[in-house]
Length: 157
Image (cartoon, helix red, strand yellow):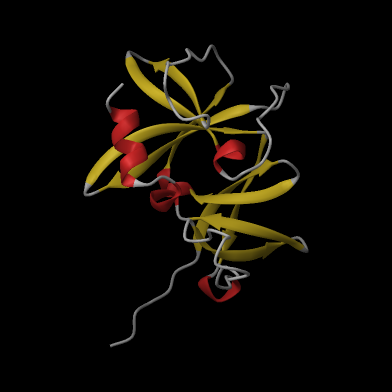
């Protein structure tokens, strides 16, 4: 029996000139940047929390998480609200992005494995590398972007 590989839709966004993508099925909504309340003693990449219709949602700076410089707010900066699966439990997070681009379709055959350049470079959070309009797109495995420990810390707030 062969497994059917379906084309997946991805929301593309930029972080420091690089193009990233996340499975559109995991995206709840995209918000304009709003007031982010800082939470003491959180990791640097956790910028704080927002109030999303009465729910407290942690906001993560993906640039900091990926070792880039902190996201600067511009007119295009937004929060991508995503659902992350942690041990079968769904957690809602906000991810800061420099800008949201578009929804694209990528077939599994167009996705190559993430490069293993060295043991120091963490690539387990990448599903792979896709190509769109002659640019590489880093496709995130959103469940692996954050370790269980980090998610538990964030949930504790």
